[in-house]
Image (cartoon, rainbow over all chains, first blue to last red; front, side):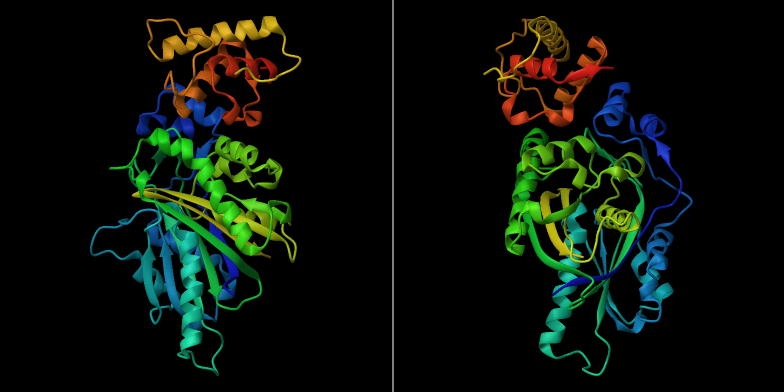
Length: 317
Length: 93
C-alpha cells in the first residue's frame, strides 16, 4: 500500500500583504476587502531573491530521512500547477537531482491536474514502485525502493499570483518520500474527478464552475471515503487546499463536517501554495500534535486551469 | 421561498431588505427596481463573487458583521431569503 515515509515543507519568510500586492495585480479596494474579510487571505509569500531551484531544495533539505537513502530513490516526480516554469535550457528538476545526488533516478514533472497534481504524483509514485515490485525488477537484497515527490513553484506571472475572486498564490515547496509498502502514513484511498468542461479557455462559464465547485469536491471526498470504507465521522482532520476560507466554511456546511476539524490556519498568512498546501498543512498538523498514530485524515485539492480536477486522498497516520 | 427563521425582528429585516434591494440595483446597474421576490442567481444573475461584494457592502452600510460561515447557499434563492438570513445572522461590527 502506497505510503508517505516522510514529509517536509518549506516556505521562505518573506511576506507581502494583500494591500502590498494590490497595485501590481490591479486589485480594486473592494477586492482587497473581500480577500481579507471573506476569503481570509491576509498575506502571501513572494520572494524574488529565492530561485525556483533553491525553493525546491528548501523542502528537500528539510527531508531528513532522505539523507543517506539517496541510492534507494528510483523516481523523482515534480508536481506542478503550471506546465512551463523556466525558460529553455534551464531545467530546475535536473539541477535539483544533481545537487541532491539523485541523478540516477528517473525524474519527470506531473502538471496535468494543476494544483491537484501533487495528489496524482503521490498515487503515481506508489503505483510505479508497486509495479516494479510486481515485475520483479527490484533487487531483492536491496532496501525497498523509494520515490521522491516534490512540489514548489514561483508566483512569477500575474496568472501565477492571482485566481480572480478566489485566491492569491504563494511560494513554497514540499518533499515527500513515498514507498510502495511503508507503514507511516498509509494511503487508504484516492478519488479524482477530471472535468474538462471547466477549461478556462474554452469551457463553461467561471460562474458555472463556481456553482459546481463545492458539490463536485464533496463528491470526490465521499468517493474516497467510501473506497476507504470510512465515513466523515472517522476522520480526525481534513487537510485542505488553501484556496480561501469562505469556500471551506461553505464546504463544511455542505458536508456536515465541523469546520474546526479542517486545518484552515495557514490560509491567512501563507496563501494558496499551488500543489504544496496539503503538505504544508500536514507539517502544521504534526507540529501541533493534531495527528496521532492510527488517525485517519483526508487531503483535498482542486486544480483549475486547462480543465478542472477535484481530488481527495484518505490516509492513516 | 422565505427561510423558516424564527426570532427575526421584522423591523431589522425590513431595513436589510431595503439596503439589499438598493445595493443590488447599484451593483447590477439596473434602472428598474429590485424587489424582495426576485431570484438572485437565475433572475438577477448574481455571481458568487458579486454575492460576496453585496454582503460586504451590507456589512459596511448597516455596521454589522454577517455570519457568512453559517450561510447555506442552497436555501437562499431570493432577495428576501438573503435578507431574512442576514437579519437573523449578524452581530454588531
